[in-house]
Length: 275
Ligand code: DGL
Image: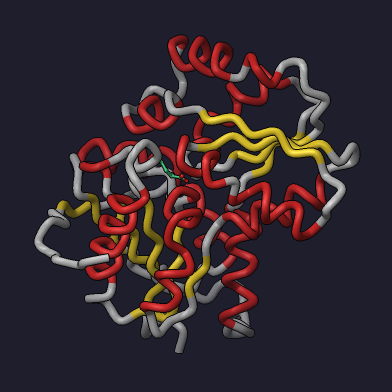
């Protein structure tokens, strides 16, 4: 029965909730264990070694729960450590970059795709490689937006300050002829209305969430048959854990997920993984 083991969704903070929401929508029977390392967010400006160490600390924490799959709902961790994690874990592991790239290739008409993400994600060129693997004739323009994650983590996505920062940061893309923009950081969908306003209607925004959840659903195989309408089915009890402030985590999570969230706080520092 699908409820026996959970699906872990991990991120440096609240960004992975954008993926968790889609997993809940597409796989409503599945129980999620969400872990956000908010205390050490942002990861995007840290060194690859630090990112790897922190990622494995998160993984060792969620592995205390019996799992059926792990979703790395963080582009930065996916860019730096996906292959290492796959080697380390005896579980299916899904990252967000390949799904995001596939969704963008489906959406573009002009063949010119923009990618915004953390400094590390952009520096690794992981999206560019993933996009060109699917369609080698694409033009790809990457831009790091290090100011975006703090806006989201500080619950300021819907403020005048956020609009100012987004407008200024995206200026280098203004002259580009792109028709599709990948939100290459899972925090960015929380800024999507502002990003769309700045980029204009002709640009399609792509978040990896939907395609990632679809990949997960395919991987898990056929789901239990729908129950007859009117039958009461208990919703799975998801677990939300943060290494940061549980109240701030809860208010962002409740707003984004549209349901009540109880967030537990845990320090992730006890683990001693050596990369
Ligand atoms: N949400 C993460 C991502 O998708 C990273 C944010 C950060 O910690 O810098 O890249």
